[in-house]
Each structure stands twice: as C-alpha cells, then as structure tokens.
Image (tube, rainbow, N blue to C red):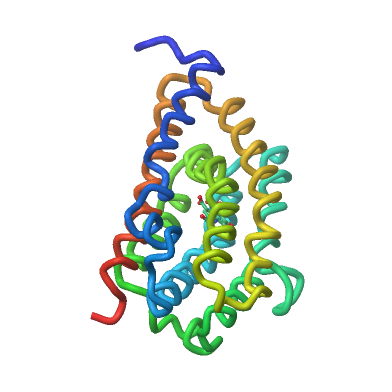
Length: 229
Ligand SMILES: O=C(O)c1cc(C(=O)O)c2c(n1)C(=O)C(=O)c1cc(C(=O)O)[nH]c1-2
C-alpha cells in the first residue's frame, strides 16, 4: 500500500478537482454570458430549490454517521442555515425571495413542478451518498464549497449586467451565502485533512469530491435539457 500523502499534497489533489466544478458547465457559461431566456433562468432557480431542500437532510445524515462529538459540534452549526429560525428567515426563505425576483410564483417552486427528473436523481444520489458512506466522505463531498464563493460572486455580477429585469432583492441569498461558504469551506478542508489520514481515506475523500462535482454537473445537464418533457 502506498504511503499516505502529506497534508500539502493531499490538499493539492483536492484543489485539482477545481477543473471538474460546475462553473465550466455549458449551461453555467451561457447563464453567465447573458444567453439564457427568462424561462431558462427560472428553470435553473426552480431546480436548485430541490438541492437547497436536501442540504439540511444530508448534513443531518453526516452528523448521524459521525461518532466524534468535536466534529458533530462543528457540523451541527450547518443544520440551521437553510431552514432558518422561522419560515421567513434563512437560506430556503432567501431562495424563495430569489424565485419571486425572477418571476416564479412561490407555489410553483414549492410543489416542485419544474424539478427535472435528472435533478431529482442527482440530488437524491447526493443525499443517499451522505446517508450510506462514512462521515468523512460526506464532509469531503461538501468541499465543492471551496470553489463556490468566486463563482457565486461572478453570478451576481453577470446577472445584474445581463438580466436587469431581476428584482434586486433576489440577490440576498448569494450575498448571505458567499461569506458563509468561505468560512465553512475552510473549516471543511481542515476536517478532511485532519481526519482522512490513511491512503484509503484520502482516496475516498478525493473520490467523494469528484462524485459531488458530477452531482452538480448532472443537475445542470437536466436543467439544460429542459424540465417539462
Ligand atoms: O450557488 C452555487 O454555485 C452553490 C454551490 C454549492 C456547491 O458547490 O456545492 C453550494 C451552494 N451554492 C450553496 O448555496 C450551499 O448552501 C451549499 C451547501 C453545499 C454542501 O454541499 O454542503 N454546497 C453548496
């Protein structure tokens, strides 16, 4: 069996997966260059709702699989983020504001009528992964957030430039999320580097992050293809 990677080399291998992140998917390139129609932009927002809905459940699954109180203490801070303290506050509430800002009715988001089957399969696979794999794999899969803050910031700039019809209040989700994603992802990386110390654990973490990149890209394949067929 090969020697485990040094901490630096392991971190570098994880960062190498940057090239598989969803910012380079053709749909995101079109979305950011102003090439999407209003219905396409709405389809992206309505499909992402399903991902947002599942985040708290996958984080709860990671905690359920983790025997270490010091890790559970850290990870449990993520449970409240999307659900918020009430129906009017938190990530899900902000996402519904975004949905309305792009012209969706709240009801058509909540009843998931625009969620493509491919989005559902991909997001459900992410949840199943976190439920059934060791907690370290679930944590490593969240490392896509190392790559998300710059991408989210570019999204806000691009949308303001290309889609001026979007109501300004809709950007609250990303404005709240960007600093949290920076902090969370630094913490996630520390956990992975500290707890994945054998060759097998390190490889499983790299594979988990690669899997998560595929989940995100599969969602975009589904959005690109169209929901209502
Ligand atoms: O808008 C984005 O591009 C984007 C990407 C990701 C990601 O890379 O997984 C997340 C989010 N947003 C996000 O808002 C979020 O709360 C989030 C949680 C997670 C995770 O896997 O735990 N990823 C992401």
